[in-house]
Every structure is written in structure tokens, then in C-alpha cells.
Image 1 (cartoon, each protein chain N blue to C red):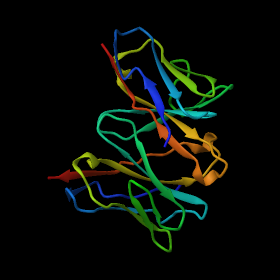
Image 2 (cartoon, helix red, strand yellow):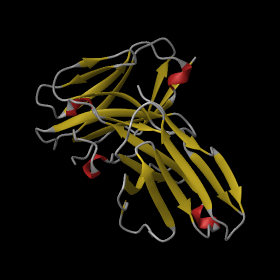
Image 3 (cartoon, rainbow over the protein chains, first blue to last red):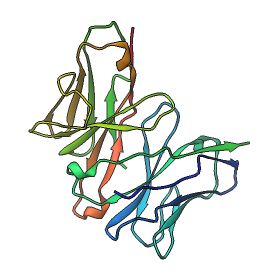
Image 4 (cartoon, rainbow over the protein chains, first blue to last red):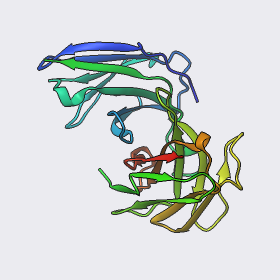
Length: 114
Length: 119
């Protein structure tokens, strides 16, 4: 699986959009970009994933560059409860077999401030 | 989304005892579940992959005789930490992969984690 690079930490004002970048310059054509977050002392929570098209769901938007070497997770209106470590992970989509494990890096610690 | 339940959320035990942690997929069947461990201020590290009806696959450096994994049904996997010692104190997290017809929709869902403290 390709490796990712994320900033160690970011701050965001409450109510503003939080834009979290991720570089994955060695991503392969069949690898997806997944985003998870982990609030302190809890298990990771799935946010969104995509291949090459931009994706949006009730939690966030995922913008993937045309060359797929980087992406940005956007939380449109950050709240204090969005304070967490955000992980960007790239891997092939699978049928849930042994290749399905996620490799977590250090992620970005997002602090939403009032 | 999907719900993965993990119990207990916290356990304190004496050195030398065994501890069992349960991971259940509540609203879907999971052929494969995963067990992770997370030490303070570190990221999640995969310990093993649990396959229903077969032996678990352990990552390098993880002792299979110490961390016993049983995946007896499509909704339950258990991790037993045998003869626990203080160095086994950690945050243990399970996950389950929800399979759907379209592979692109497969998503891994996580339990809330179990904090193990060995005295």
C-alpha cells in the first residue's frame, strides 16, 4: 500500500471549514483514498473514501487532484466535537479478505477552537 | 454506517491472569475482523486478522500463543490476552469489514476499543 504524508497538527476555528491535506504521490491506479478519524480514547470512525472523483457525504467532502497524488478532506462547518486525529489511508478496495487491513500513519491532530 | 460492539470497554486485571475481549458486528456479517493495538500517543498497529472458521493470521512480532483469537461466527471474534503482564497494558481495538456487492463500497468499521490495565 502507498504511503501518505499529512501535517502533524492543524487548528481550525469553530464554524469554519477545516481543510485537511494528504499527499500520496506513489498511489497506484487501483488504490482508494480512505479517511478515518479517532476521537480521544475511542475507536476510529470512518468518514469517507474515493478513487478519483470528488465525494461528499453527510460528514465531509473529499477532493482528489486529477493526478491523484494528493487529496483534501473538507469538514464544511467544524465543531468542537470534530477535534480528533484524522488519518488518510490509501489501499486497494477489497472483498474484506486479509488484504483489507488498514495501515495507520500518524495522522493530523485537528484542534477546533471556539 | 454499521455498528461494531466491543466489550469490555475497560478492564483492570492482575499480572498473570487472562482477559477476553469480544468484538461483535451487530447489523452485518463479517467474514474478516481485525485486531489492533494502540500504545499512548502512538498510532494503531495491526496485531492479527481474524477469519471466520479458520486460524487467525498474526503480524510479525505478535505472539499467537499469548494473544488467542477465535472467530467462531460471522458476527463474533474474541481476543484473549493470556497470562497478561504490565507491558500488555494498552488500548485494543477491533474492526470488521462490511462486505457489499460492489467491492468499492467495502468499509471497515471499528469498535470503541478496550483499555487494558495490568497491575
